[in-house]
Image (cartoon, rainbow, N blue to C red; front, side, top):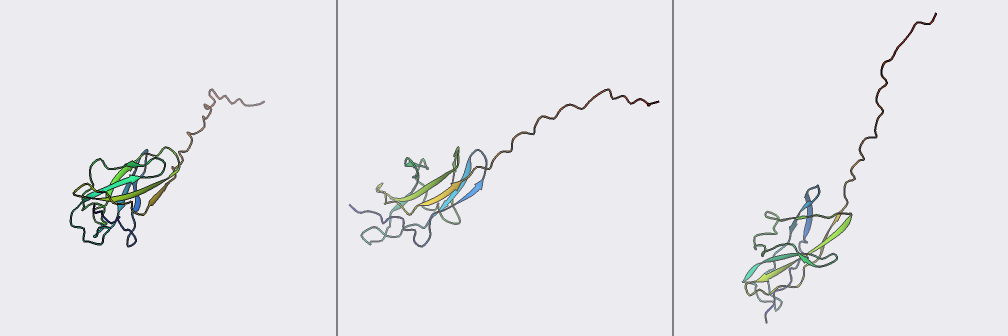
Length: 138
């Protein structure tokens, strides 16, 4: 069985950056496409990619293969995560050929999420005094 060489990211690593902040965070991933199989032969049937979050339980981010044109600096793969607390999210990408053979994991890329603290609501201020009366002292 022929295998795809793993997505070698020594030349360029998966990079993640924040696109927006809020209850969810929008991230973008980029990587370099593999060009060979593990036996050194040229990779001619690259079908696409899978992106996984690997901190804690391994879970696939994409629902269908990411196209071979995705993940480039000109066409990064955009995705959303919804962390609920400070954490380090770790990701890997794999290549998939037309037969469905998946490569080994790429190098890991991490994004450290630190929520921006929400300031507490202003303290209750007392109502202003009313019915002020000033009398001339004899």
